[in-house]
Image (cartoon, rainbow, N blue to C red; front, top):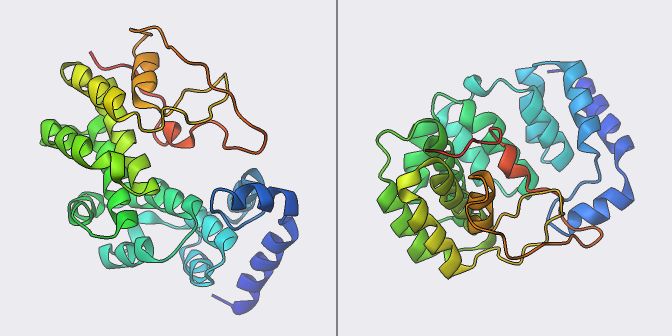
Length: 250
């Protein structure tokens, strides 16, 4: 890919950088000041361009990597490439988009899920849990849900933030989509209290697993708390919608 094209796209992204947006994003570890809706518009204009996507990723710039993940062709990455990409230091948003927009669409997703599930790096392990959440919802056959709940119960409370977030997601999806495991999922969430006090806007679902499960399952229990969002804090829990709001499992 001609260097001038990469430079042109990088310049376009740099021109969109907003110091106020950057300040908000930095509070959650994302070192960019981009309006993501505008990044998506650029991606829509560029369309799929795998060579350009590779070059933008190689730049190491967070905004460029976000754009790269929108214009790449997920099936063109080898398992080794995806493994290397998930291990590179990156902003949380880059990691989230890499897993949800690229790895989940890769033919190597299941093999990577299994390989990453025992990885000592908590960021890599969090990717495995994100892929496991996908399977819990879409392809649960063959998963040992009891073993997953055992691991969550034993490890989630003390897990690093990104890993804890991903494990909590799996806990909620098990409770939402598998009625026979719902009582235990609720009990684990209530005992561990992970994300219980997470600031959540009134029109959004709390990531606290018992609240999330109950809300998605028709309010089986009356929610006891109402969360508020301080200015500048995170908005709705984006990962709720990585693969659409799910109906409660029966």
